[in-house]
Each structure stands twice: as C-alpha cells, then as structure tokens.
Image 1 (tube, rainbow, N blue to C red):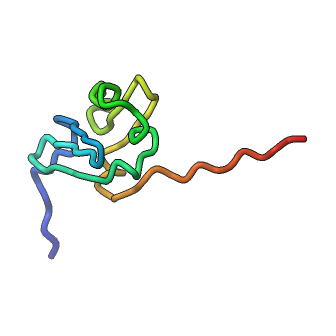
Image 2 (image 1 turned 90 degrees about the horizontal axis):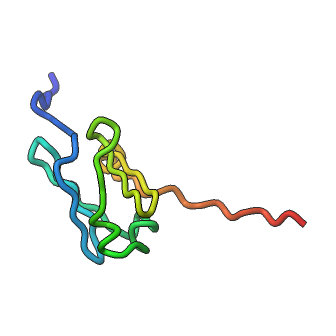
Length: 92
C-alpha cells in the first residue's frame, strides 16, 4: 500500500533567488531549490527582475512579467530544466 501525501499543497507561497539558485516555498511547507543555470532567462535577468514575480495558474505557477518567463511547481518538482532552444534555420 502506498503512502499518500494528504496535505500536499503545491501552490507557491514565496520565491527567492541569488546568483546561483532559485528557491520556491510551497504552501505545504516544502521548499524546492534548483540551479538558476537551468533557466537561462532567469539567469540572465537582474535580481530586481527575478524579484518581480507573480503567481499564475491558480497559484501552481510563477510568472516573471519583466522577462516573460513562466515556471510551474509541477515542473520544478520533477526537476525539469528549461528546454534547450532550437537554432533558427537560416532562410537564404
């Protein structure tokens, strides 16, 4: 028989970052910390831009309006870095 996390609440409570890490506090008391290098837009942003975030998706996501970046708590919990950007084909 599996153990269920009956009180899991994966909505975002707070977001902090430094030059190396992004940390997301969840409503259920957990904190997810991931390398900032996984998210190039956030890595290239100023601290002020990273500090300007808002909840999205009913609280299950984070949106940074200054850099048009969005992350979900589901992806963070899975340990999913941003997808690699594909090179743009040269149309000659």
